[in-house]
Amino acid sequence: MSRDKADTYILDTSALLTFIEDENGSDIVNDLLFRAENGEIRIYLAFISITEVYYITLQEKGKVEALRRIGLIQSLAVQIEESSEVLNLRAGNLKANNRISLADAYIAAFCMLNDGILVHKDPEFEKLSPMVEEQRLPYKT
Image 1 (cartoon, rainbow, N blue to C red):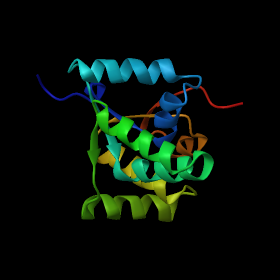
Image 2: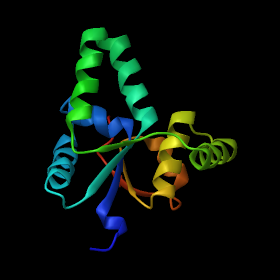
Image 3: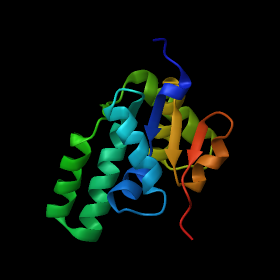
Image 4: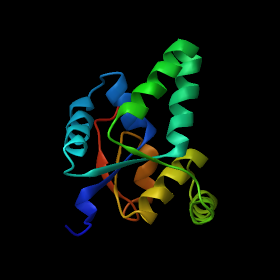
């Protein structure tokens, strides 16, 4: 089977937290995870999303819950990708030319380098359309 953009998804930190906290849109993430578990699609996470989930949860809910969430993420049918020189330079370029966070620059750069569909609920990514194909989850209101 040839690799197709429709086969590859990248979950932003907001998508992970949507799934973990059962927020509006968690059904979409859950469906993608189910499809990945069945080998229909591939799901990737940029390394920085693990850091974000950990520190956000550590601040809001404490260390025990933060570690529980990291364990949950590691049990999912996702591939966690580490940094590389190519990723660092692409993220730096995005950060230098767009008003986005460094974490979002890394996630968007990873998405671009892997020709994937970014799943998120972060309005910051709208600035990068059409460079990054998106599947937007319902934004918080």
